[in-house]
Amino acid sequence: FSFKFHLSGTCAHLQTAVGLHRCHLNITGACSAIQKMTRVRVVDNSTLGNTPYHRPPKCIHVYNKSGVGKVGDKILLAIKGEKKKALIVGHRRPGPCMTPRFDSNNVVLIEDNGNPTGTRIKTPIPLILRKHEGEFSKVLAIAQNLV
Amino acid sequence: MWRGSRWLRGLLLRPAGPGRAPAVRRAAGWAGPAGRALSGGPSAELRAGGGAEREHRAPDHALSKFSIDFVTALLRQENASNICVIQLPPEMRYSDYFIIVSGSSARHLHAMAHYTLKMYKQMKQENNPHVLIEGKDTDDWMCIDFGSIVIHFMLPETREIYELEKLWTLRSYDDQLAQMVPASLPDDFIFGLTNKQQ
Image 1 (cartoon, each protein chain N blue to C red):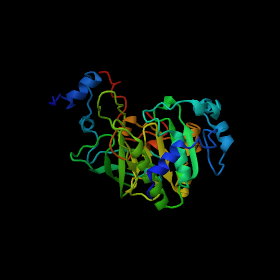
Image 2: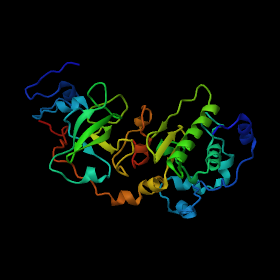
Image 3: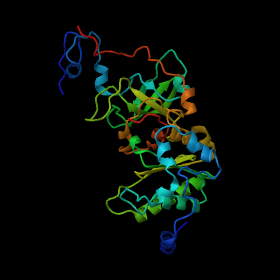
Image 4: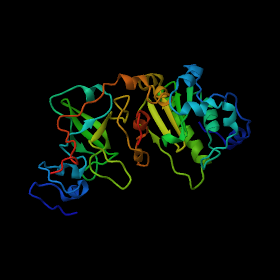
């Protein structure tokens, strides 16, 4: 996996994916799914996730051997000045073949015991979570749209 | 709570239990017949066919002995309150049956979940997948996913908070979803990268 750096500094892998256009934005962040300091989008209807704050929720730790979080990994989020655990339900990085890729890094807030903080999720949730080892049935149970 | 094999044989030979007619059943009677009428989406048509046909329909999954009727009989025997069985349409690609069950205490939920798992382990063959209990360290919500059946064990308070029956019967018409404020895109969202043709 070699990176070819263009004048605009974009990732060659993503350039080929989106058709070799010139964009002047550095989008190399999407190459690594979710890691420390990524801004994420909370997609459930919890009050903590939906009240506006002057800083977006950021990942501060990924509970994984590598520091990169994919769909189904637990992360620690800094949200409204507090720490909260969350579950990744979708990221902008292309995943394995025939799995959905999302336009935003989606995350669902969960408690320390694994119960989801919100009660409904409107955004699509990938069904590959069912095959993963882990406690995802609760998140799938409160999702409206399964993809 | 160890059940001997003699009891198990008796359970299997027992004739089909009562009350199999409605596909969505609930002891407390929350919108029993109304629930069927209210439900939007494709699941209504399947259930409107009536419970009578369901008894004679052979279960499709590999573990034919661990059927929905066996599971409901088991839960009733465990003094589970408010057993709610929802039959899901195959278009959802999630499972065939979605069961929500209430318990009287955290210990009761724990016991029910472990007992259901023990029964499954006794009845499954080598090619059936192992099943784990999710939420073992919680005290109000446990669930088990058996492939074609998903069972949620909750305390009544937790049940009231999440209202899973409402979500899974009225899929898009659920009132909690309607109350959710539609999300706007965050300010740093880079959209339309593919549209930038220079």
